Length: 112
Ligand SMILES: [Zn+2]
Image (cartoon, rainbow, N blue to C red; front, side, top):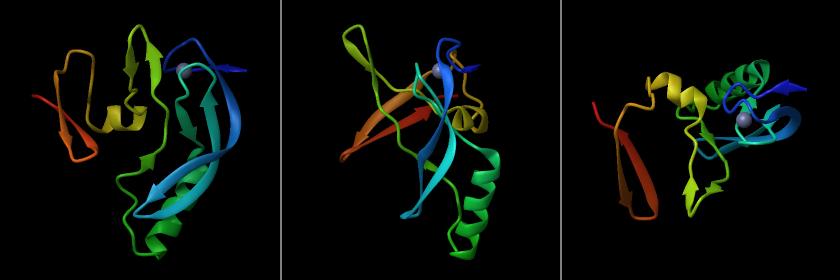
């Protein structure tokens, strides 16, 4: 078993049910999921296939919508930023974020 590089607590187990939603097209891919933080890592070859398929359908595969569960800690709920977004947006623990509610959506904006 491989240790999760995100939380260093869980193991990565092979799963076949990661759901990628690209502009309403649902793709189910193989990958790894952490047993602790539930972070999902779609396998790179599968992700490439999905991107190729999405381009054929004429949809741009960004943003990739990943489904994940909130986790409970203390009295609150914890939302983990997917690591690909963390890298793309160059986020770190020192960046302040603004959280706003727009209808039934939550918008998280990094403040610079
Ligand atoms: Zn983890």
